[in-house]
Figure 1 (cartoon, rainbow over the protein chains, first blue to last red):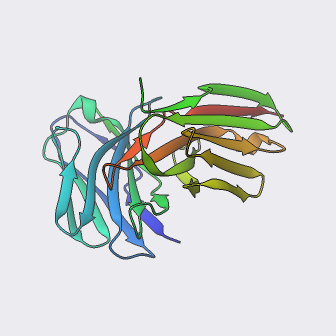
Figure 2: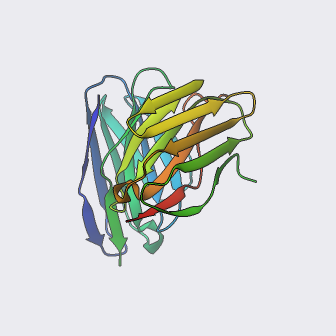
Figure 3: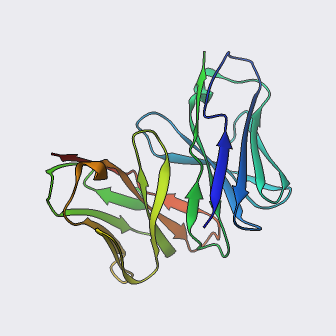
Length: 113
Length: 110
């Protein structure tokens, strides 16, 4: 079983400020990693996924970026936050083959003012 | 039309009732997940299945590949089962893509 550590859990940031959300995975190696965003009352929107170190695929053009500097570390960043970046961000991991079980972090609630 | 559709969108039931949540999909998938999201936002994986039926405690998930349909059942429902239940399929044409249902909000009243 995997454990996903995601932080910070909550943050309030002014428009134009930078962002860094971090996610680390325990209990597996070479997982597929995902960043999702969930707006209030809505479903999950895939932002980025990574199948290996340094390999990032973006699903939605935006002012966010992702990096995977280590096998079990996934970082979501922004240089300048927008009001529309507010939401609930979830990191997810899928170990083994592409049809493996999904594990989620506890989420990071971002409010941009 | 969404590629993965869940029904109902909202479901309110009394404690003890048998609950069924449905998930239909129109694309080829290699496996289907059922997940539970609690009010705090955390998501827990309940099942991953590609055929047949799986059972875990009071939860049962079934999938019919030919009919492109899956169901999640909860027996002897309890207020602590109140949550949003989400199905998501692995897109057969894209190894890493998940196609998400919109979720079913379940409320179990004592």
